Amino acid sequence: MTRIGPFAGAFLLMALALPAALGETIDLPPLEPSPAMATRLRWLQYTMVSGRVLVSSSHTTRITVPLQVSLDGRRRERQSLNINNALTNVQYELITPVEQLSVTVTDSAQLSISRVWHDGKYELQFQQIPGKPIQLAVAEAGSKRALEAESFWHLSIAQPEIVRRHLVPVLEMLHPLWQLSDMGRAIEDLLFERAQSQPQPDRQRWASLVADLASSKFSVRQNAERELSKAGQVVVPYLQNLDRSRLDAEQAYRVRSLVESLAVGYEDTADRIVIWLAGDEHVWLSLLSRGELTKRRVAAEQLTAIIGPIDFHPTAADSTREAQLERVNNRLRHPGAQKKP
Image 1 (tube, rainbow, N blue to C red):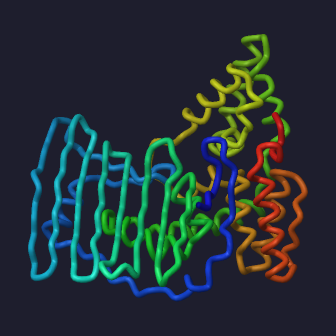
Image 2 (cartoon, rainbow, N blue to C red; image 1 turned 90 degrees about the vertical axis):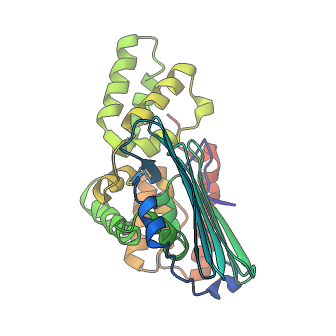
């Protein structure tokens, strides 16, 4: 499985070349819940927070909507809803002559999606579990692709076409006003604009502050944590990418606290996500594969500023760049390749 971005100490990725058969894409029919079922699905509030789907309700007491079944010709829908002390649980299923779609929300933050054609020619599986990478698997035309990422936005930057075709239509069935593909393109454009207008953060200073988190003096530890906190969301990828095996207990505790405190608990906007992703080496690694030469050059400059010189030439032939990308990816997969605090 391809993993994109840092998660739980893992450093993986760029997408490897897709099998040729995956170019034989399938026309996917639109997802159209019946009006009654769509209304019930939208009784809830769906938000994207740090690239994760969260489901909430204005109700704070226990509410259960029993299983609802709708039969319309050869279509069948089933839905149940349970809200318990603001934790929301939803089960929705749509069966048509072509496919079966299932959406399950557990405790407001765990989301599972399955979309399978009866003839076996298409399958989508999506899993979002708190504290774990999100997972997306797509099979069509005899080929299968499995991906992992820290967030929807990491996944969207690494594989925009796969996300646009397969995942976005299901998510926007729940929240039709999201316009996730447009926001993904806006985030990418803003990342390049920011890269060309703002200097890279002083990561050497961050490394020094992380080292100070292990100081024997309480005042030094407190000051270091305070200064790292002042850096804001842009420091989060750096902290997440630290080799935890090289941190003592005090450092690990304070780094974890900083990441948790800097996590934004309100709905994503393009500007805020750009600040969060701007210092993430895995994001710039993904952007090295863009078709536009100017974007590859900027991405290479940004990645060099973050991890040091890389063996990548934006003007090289496609086959050469593919091999270079794999070497850079392998470098990021090993904690020893990261700058030490």
